[in-house]
Amino acid sequence: MSATEKPPLHNEELRISAIAVSRGIGDGPAFFLPAFDIPAEHRYLTDENVSKEVDRLKFAVGRAQVNLDKLASPSAGNDSIAGIFDTHLLILDSFAAKVEHRIRSEHINSEWAIEAILKDGVARQGTDTDKHLLEKHLDLKDVAAGIVDELRNADRVDIPAGSVVISREIRPSAVMEMARSSPAAFVTRRGGWTSHSAILARELGIPMITGANLSMIQPGDRVIADGFSGEVIVRPGEKVIASLSSAQISIAEPVSTLDIGQETTTLNGIGMTLRVNAESAVAYENARRVGATGVGLFRSESLIPKSGKIPNEDQQAVAYMRIGETVGTAGVNIRTFDIGPETSNGMSVAERNPSLGLRSIRLSLAEPELLKTQLRAILRANDLGNLSIVIPLVSGLSEIRRFRDALNQVVESMSASSKWIPRVGAMIEVPSAVLTAREIADEVDFLCLGTNDLVQYLLAVDRDNERVADWYQTLNPAVLRAISEVVTAGRDAAIPVTVCGEMAGSLFYIPLLIGLGVRELSMSGNSIAAARRLIGGISSLDAEAVANEAAAGKTAAEVDLALRKLYLKHWAHLFPEGFLELKHS
Image (cartoon, rainbow, N blue to C red; front, side):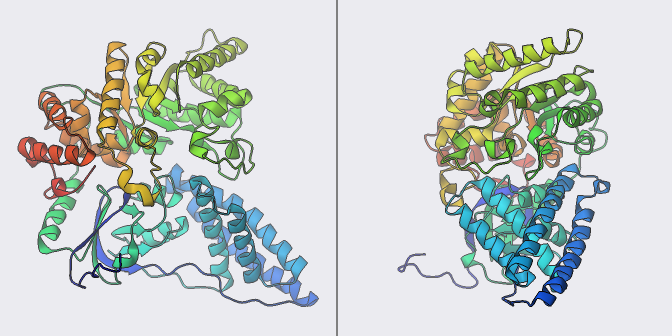
């Protein structure tokens, strides 16, 4: 706020634009989560007290490990959640050893040692804002907090049920702890779509918004967190409360069990294939029950602990076989490792622009044994012939041809002539791939359109940087033209095009995508039920007319406004009341 601006009245409605990372609408009083801090207790120890302090540390670490074991337990039925806390268990071992070394070598107490190690981590990180490094530091801080809580036998923070939790950042274990109290939503200053806290919020069905300016929110303020548009409404008026309450009810309506086994079609009978983005058999089974057909995106890097080694061939083969057997003929699209060198070799490799560096298919081709190990695992797991491969970050034909050469070499080396050879698809997410989509389509079996990264690379905007959130415009005309170009390339080559970014699961974007010619969508399991209801009430012919008219807009704001008006004209009854009054561009 500038010096000339007047602060809002305490009862004045205020809207804050931010980034939605977990869908849903949360409505409740603002509860500010206390920031994690280490007690300022600096004590030098005698030789005799060092041993006692180490025993104190080991007791606290043991208690912290028990807590993490519970969170990482596969009995919870969610592999994504368990995997995050498996990583924390690995961090705990190495971190505890470092703390003990500090205690013994410097004769200081546990809290002081923990504080020093965390500060060292921040110092090494420096000014680097790479989201992967920031996420790793938050994981480290989370593990440290677990030990500190046990050292001081701290009480858990009680979150009033139905609160909108406000915090600069939320640690993953805090998400799990607060989930027991049924918070309405999380609103944070820092975070991003790929952060562990956001992943957990999505898995738990809790709306979450990041990149929000928290300075205008007071404890106890009524807050509506719109996990569809990314808007935070502080002290909402009666009209907003009424409309968004209706939206909550409409979005939560279940799909009739009579519809689950039926094909998803538009009002005029055009078939739509709805796939799920999933990394576990449990996640797929849950999505299948509400109408998902196949896995549109299996992120193979989900198998890699961030602080551990890449799974070997046997471990990968078991994981791919398990998901393939569960999904059956509906098929699984396995994306090869979408990672950077810091993950592949376990070293901290500083790149000035990590998103533009040696990662994804570039890294796989630069480290051929990494790629061939993964290809062997997929071939071994493909006895049913239902596994396909998606190449990430394709920029042109050369990568596809080099990939196919590697695949052919692996097939020959395995004497796998009797094996099912996986179909190969390309992930279209960078401008050069869009501009050469027709050439790419001629040499692959299908295309996957990753709209999240497409927007990021096309508009040169970091999707996890709240400071440039206004420039991340899904409805920018350039994005719509890119989607249309890729869909047309797939149609002309007679191959499927699956949209698997955030647009695919959004009620606001689905009619537009149908109008642009998209017939396959892959989304989070939580989005499928609502998507099916919406699609069943839309004619593809009307959707095409709407897309053509909206695409005439010259800015993202113009496209957004045109879509909302057209949706109100054609399909107002299909959207939750108040939903179309929100900004979605």
